[in-house]
Image (tube, rainbow, N blue to C red; front, side, top):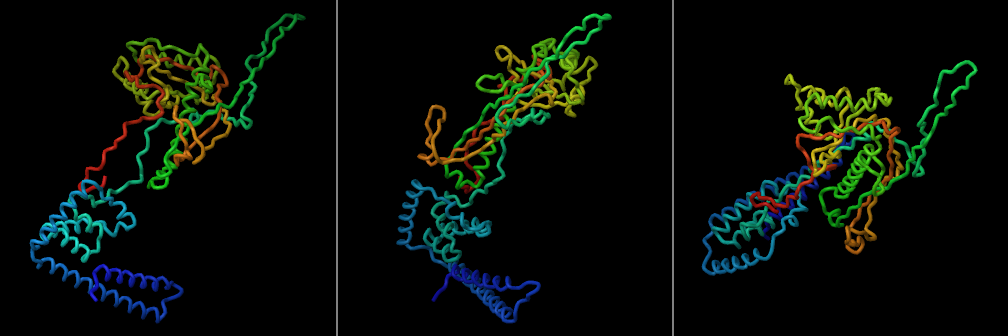
Length: 477
C-alpha cells in the first residue's frame, strides 16, 4: 500500500521520540544497559531508513510534477468553475491564519511556509489549482499552504507580536519622594499637638511684678479623605490577551491614585472632599508675586528666588540642607536659558545637576502653567522643607476585581454580571497638613515658562489611538 510523505514523517517523529525515551534513562550514575543500547541502534537504523524513503518519495513527486501534461479541456473548465467559487468565497470570508497556526510550534513553519507557498503558486499557474493543491498535500501535508493557493491575496505570514508593551508617559510623584513625614492613621484620624505660641521673658526692677505669659498650643487634625479609581474590561480580554491585561489595568489604577494624591498634596483646596494641599496651606505672606511679569532678567529672577527663601528663613524655618524646589519642567528650561548681562547662563550648570541656589529641584507637570487670567502664563514655584509636610496614611489601600454587581459609567448603568464584564476598583484614604504655615513659600511667577501654557496639572501625556493595520506583504492585519 502506498504511503505518503506525511505518514513517513510521522513515523520518523515517533521513532525519534522512542530514541529520546531511551536516552532519558541514562544518567552519570546509571549508564544505558546493553539491551537499551541495542534498541537505540535499531531505532536509529529505522530512522535513517525512513529518512531515505522520504527523500526518494519527495524526488519522485517532484519529477512527476515536472513531467506533468497540461490540463485537458475538461479540467480547464473545472478550474474555471473552481476559480469562480474562489472569487465568491473571497468576497464573503476572511481566512483566519491564527486558528491554523496557534497550536503549531514556530519551528514548524518559520522560513519554510513562504517558500512552499511560492512553489504552490507556480504549480497553480502551470497545472491548475487542484493539481497544485494535490501536490502540496502529497509533498508537505501542509493544509494552510494548500488553502492559501485559493488566492494570492490570502495572508500566510502571521505577524510577530511583541509582549514588551510601550508604557504610558506619565508624571512622577514628588511629595513623598522629597521626604515628607508619614504618620499612620490606624483609626482613620489623628490629632497632633502643636505649640503655636511661646511665653515671654522680660527684665524687671527690684521687687517689681514679673510679666506673666503662657505658651499656647493648638492641634493639627488629620482625618481620612477617601479616594479611588474604577475601571472595567471584557472577560475575553483577560482570558485571550497575550499580555497580562489584568496586571496592566491594576498597575494603571495604582499609578493614577499615586499621582492623584500627589497633585492633591500640592494643589488641593479642600473642595469636593479633598485634603488641603501645600499651596493653600501656606501663610498669605509666604505667597509672593514675581518682581516683573515682562522682561524678566537674570537679576529680577535671582532676586525673586532669594526672596522665596527669605520668607522661610526669616520665619525661623531652618534650612539644614533639605529645602526643596518644586517647579514645572518649563520653568527649569526658562531658567537654564536666562543669561546675565555678561552673556553667561548662571543657573544652567547647577540646574543640570538637579539643584538651584544649593537646594534640590524636583519637577512635576502637576503644577499648572496657565493659572493667570485668560490662561496667562502664570505658574507656582514652591520652596518647601519636606520634613515639615505631614501625610496621614490610613493604610486602607486595596485593589479588588469582581464580575458581580453593577456601577455607573457617567450616566450609563453598566451591569458587570449581566454583560460578562470584569470590574477593577482601587481605593485608599489619607490626609495632608503642614507643621507650620510658613514651612513652605510660593512664588507666583508670570512668564517664567518660555510661553508654555499647556493645560495645567497633567499627570500623563495621551495621544490618539493608532488603529491602522499592518502594511507588511501578505500580513495578517
